[in-house]
Amino acid sequence: MSELVEAITWLGTEAVLCLFVVGDAAVVSQAPVVSGVEAPRVVKSYYLDDPDARLGGRVVYEHDLVFSAVPANLESLVRTWLDAAVDAGAELAWFAFEGSFHFDHLLTPDVADQVYGIADASGLATALDDAHRASDLWTRALENRLKRE
Image 1 (cartoon, rainbow, N blue to C red):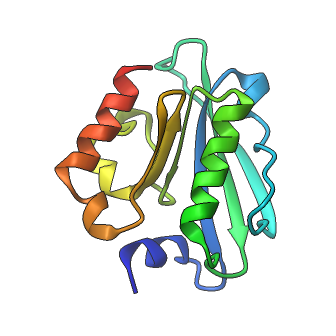
Image 2 (cartoon, one colour):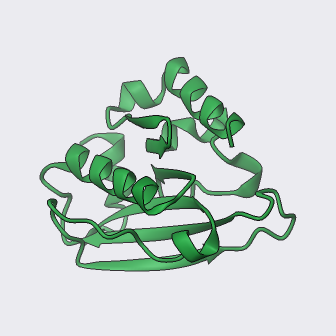
């Protein structure tokens, strides 16, 4: 079993994919509308409080997509949700492991191996392969995305 599969099935009975979105509250507070891929059993949304205003006037929400099992076409599903988030108006969106989010570590090298998809207006990239997620190339790609924000 891959580290990715282990991380998204840590509950043991279901798969949880954590989508983080940054942008205007009116846009990112609702999970994007998605079609054409397996639908989650439930979507749980959470506002992540930014008490130090590190994101300026932007906010971040976490949308947990809960599935009964790991979706059959995980790559397509991740890409579709990231595209939908950006199309809906999110400035930045990414999928990462549960527990990886902290304002002190927004897409920093120490959490890069826990991020498996990212998108903004300039494009989309995924790293579902454990080795790719652990690479310097992936780490630099994440850091560069945040610098543009």
